[in-house]
Length: 222
Ligand code: URA
Image (tube, rainbow, N blue to C red; front, side, top):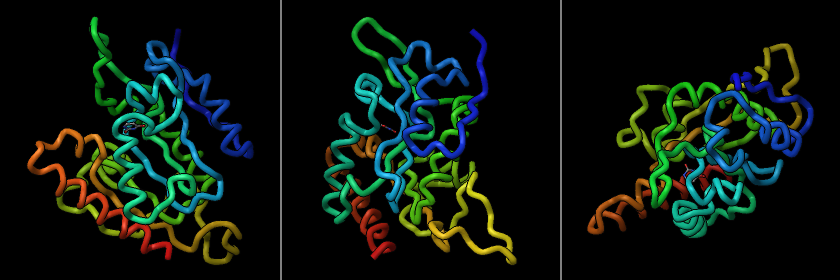
């Protein structure tokens, strides 16, 4: 079967996008995967988290960040005073990419072609959500949304003004859209999975740094 470029319908809201994305054939990842894992959260969310791609459990359940990385994220959000149910959580790539082995499916990072193929969905999500703060979880999202040269280690935890791709720009003689924030902010932080992979002696500090960054996000909305 040939790849068919993603073309998200407009004016259908998040549920309409989710339904359309379920049949996405924009790259080859759909075939071995169980299902499209679309973003999750209310249309009124002011914070949008962008991860890399669903993992094994997310692929099975059809929901983002519900495996080990998701549990760590949940804990860090609570500590930072952010309620997950008020946020929207999605991924740069919406199918699980893996290498099958007899025992388990081994996560494989998405390639540039998968990020490119999937991007229209992410832009459509931004268009509907008009977020105030976008948080990149890890280097894949940060490189895709900020710049290919972005270095998490150097530049994490800082709020930066950012214009979501796909959100119509306001020209000086136009009224801004009523529900759009005057400014969208971006912050990049470590990926929860990277924290899980951190050696024992450094893991607590890595987790603490994530909570610190999430407190900056919470502060931006206060
Ligand atoms: N890692 C991600 O980047 N996204 C998920 O949804 C789960 C794990």
